[in-house]
Amino acid sequence: MRVPVLGLLGRPGQRKDLIASVPPEEFGDEPWGPAVDTMQGEIELDLILEAISGGILVRGPIRATATGTCARCLAATSDTWEVEVLELHRAVAEAGDEDDGGDEDDLDYRLVDGDRQLELDQMVRDALVVGQPVRVLCRPDCLGLCPTCGADRNTEPCAHGAERPVDPRWEALRGLSLPSTDPDDGTDHGA
Ligand SMILES: [Zn+2]
Ligand SMILES: [Zn+2]
Image 1: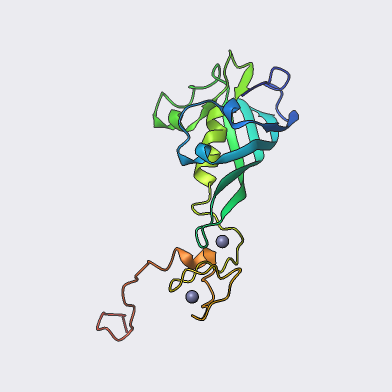
Image 2: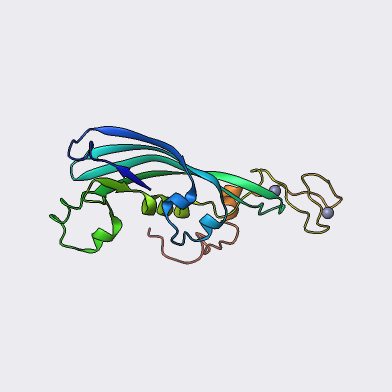
C-alpha cells in the first residue's frame, strides 16, 4: 500500500491523517509468518503522517483480527489486537549523510518513488507480526476443559472441581523456575 506524500515532505510540522480499512493483501504477499493465515477481515489503520526533517513520521494504532481456537476450551474464536506504531520513513535523497551505510540502515523504512510515496507494506507487516497475540482466548476468564473428563467448564460444570485458571498475563511464568534466593544459603551478602 502506497500513500502519496508530496504535499508533506520538506514541510516539517505538516500532518495528514490516514484512516483506512485495508485488506491484508494490500500489504504485499511476502510471508507474514503465521499472522496472515489467520487474519480475518480488514486491517484498520488510524495513523497520522507527520513531516519532520528528513522524512515522514508515521504513528498511531493498527488493528487486526485473527481467527483461531481458544487455547483453553478449543472453541473457534477470534481476537482483535492493536499495535501502536511510531516509525520514521526517511527520504532517500536526504539519507546517508550521517551514517555511512552501516547496519542502522536496515532498521529504517524508506520513502519510495523518488520520495513521493510512503510504502506501508513492510511497516504494517512488521508491526502486526510482532504484536500478534501468542495465544487466543475466547474470553479472558475462559474456564477451559476439565483435564479429567474433558467437559467444557464454561457450559457444563462437572464433578472434578474447578481451579480458577491463572490470570493469562501470568501464565507465561508457570514454566519459569528461578534460582533459590534464600538469604541463608551461605553466599556473602556483605556485612
Ligand atoms: Zn475458551
Ligand atoms: Zn470433569
